[in-house]
Structures are given as structure tokens and as C-alpha cells.
Image 1 (tube, rainbow, N blue to C red):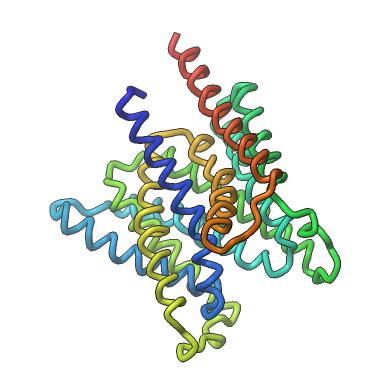
Image 2 (cartoon, rainbow, N blue to C red):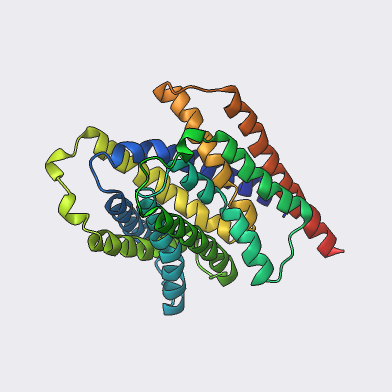
Length: 307
């Protein structure tokens, strides 16, 4: 990458760190009145329609091929339908500590996929960075969240759902990068959000969320949270994610899995008055170290391959 593209990529990554890290707080308020899968499905489907309209207005002579629609829909289903949807279902059965740690292990899936499927061997520094990131996220967790007291009998199914969800998210990232479809980020994100949004709404309907909705119970917080998630999380965040997936490695892109929980904690400290402990500060340093190791490791690997 040249200097300009490096600046653009890091601008995109920082946006994802901040934007998707801030969505935790917004989701917390939204699901007080809207079932989680329905909230995610409606948000992504709406964002997909809006982004498709924008893409068509700015590129009137362009329309994606049927292959592009199929590939992008599959990616969207893997990322948003199975990925986000699986996590949303699993957290009802699994203590939050386990869920957070398994989700943070997405980069491990990516390393395995790159090794076994793409035959790309990551450098020891990249592997060290991935493991360091998981340790950093683990340090952020409250060990009480790992208590199994009162856990439902569906705990094992919840763990399996999380493993499937994180694997499918990782697979979607790799397919998205491998496809290299010749369309703008607006078109790509629109197709992916539409595919993922429809899949999530179908699952939401299947598990009976539609019957639990009480529109009369919606309040200002509901609409404010929805609009924030729609604009910052989906329209902005997923478009940046789609753009980055075409321009950087999945492992570097997946570092948001480490940084987002940290951003969520810091925002909770600033806006909600949550406690900021020394452990959080140490975890922040470890997470930053993980991102540095992955970044430097991949640059060294590219230079070695270019020789």
C-alpha cells in the first residue's frame, strides 16, 4: 500500500472501531422495546434499500450482475444473517463472558481459513497478534460473567451457535475479499445488507419475534437508537466494512473485534458513568499491542513476498 491508501485504510478502520464500538450502547437501548433479531433485520434491510437507491442515483448506468447479487447475498447472509443472528440467539443461552470471548476469537477463524483454504501461512508475529488480542479482550471481561449458575440447559447449543456464527462471519469476510467484485462499496454493501436483512427477518419470524412486538411501547429512545444504528452502524459502518474488505487483509480488518469492546467500555464510562478500572487500562494496552503486531507482521510478510 502507498502512503495515501494506508491513510485511507486506517481512517476506515478507526471509523469501524468507533462506530461499531458505539453501537453496543445503542443496541442496549433499542432491544428494551424491540426484539433483537427483528431490530437487526429491519435496520439492515432498510439500510440496504437506502444504500441501493443512493448507489443507483450516483451510478445510474451501473447495475450489478446476477452473479454479483448472488455472491453478495451469500456474504450478507453469512455476516448478518448467520453471524449477527446466531450471536443474538446464543446470548439468551450463554453467559456474556463466554459470548464476548468467542466473538473476539473471529481472527483465529480467519487465520485458520487463510491457512487451510487459501494456503496462506501467517507469520509468527501475526499469529502472536491474534492471540494477544484475544487475551486483551479476555482481560476486559468480568469473571462473574463466566459463572454457570442459573445457566439454561441450552448452554451447549449456545456455544455451538456462537462457534457457527463466528465461523460464518469469518467465512463471509474471506469470500468477500476473494470475490473482488467490480462494483462500488455502495453497491456491495447494499446487496449484502439486503441479503442479510432478509435472512435475519426470516429467522426472526421463525422464532416468533413478530408476535412479541408492541409498537405502542416504542419511545423516543427506541427511535433515536434505531436511527443511530441505521445511519452510523449500518449505512456508514457496513459500507466502510465492504470497502475495506476489498482493500486489506481479513485479519487486519477483524481487529475491530478487539477494539470494539474497549470502545464500548470507554463510552460507558463517559456517558453512563460506568467504572473505568486499572484492568481496563492494561487491557487497552494489550489490545493496541495486538493491532500493532498484526499490522507490522503483515507488512513484513508482504515485503518478504515481494523480494
